[in-house]
Length: 257
Image (cartoon, helix red, strand yellow):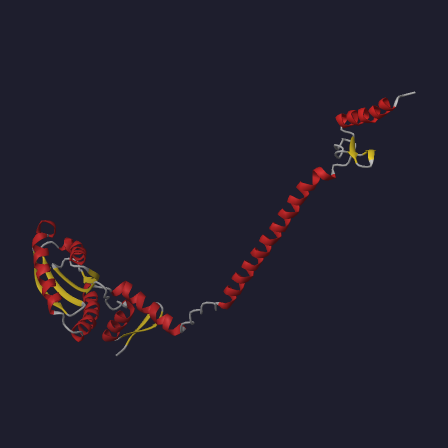
């Protein structure tokens, strides 16, 4: 039979052992067996808790992809609506077949009749129209004087390249100029046109250059200006009318009496 002293020590010893083993928790109501921590998952147990975090990340990624797809659909719809609001470009109006046939006939005539004399008259008509525009515009005295001085200096400086050249005519308004230059070497005229255009800052130039001719005639437009369009078919048609030749159809002509 245990003494009271021994009886009192047994529960205390059990509590100490149990506490050391981590299997029991001491409470005011005595010693009750309780789990001090959840048991670790074993291979035989379902891994629900281990898979919970990856599942949450996957669901979040799916939601993000869905939002991006919705934004992309909205952008596509906006682009489609914007494109639908822009009217299609207007198609070019159909040209009169008779006009087309006449233009082809004029072009065919030019191919076989474009002699130096015809070329000179066609360019003469064009230069006459440029002269009308030049004479109608107010004259820029300062600019015209600068062009004339610049031409004399340019021809002198370029003598070693283009040979001797003499400025016979230079008339300028406020944007257009007409020039006539006599050159020593006909083959240098194209280079001279480009040289004048570059050095005196002309945006456009149109020149009559004929073989075996030592004269260079040209019209020029200063920076920011432009020459009228050279419509060769129109001028050739005028020349045909002057000669009494009427284009009727492609490849056929009729001379009017």
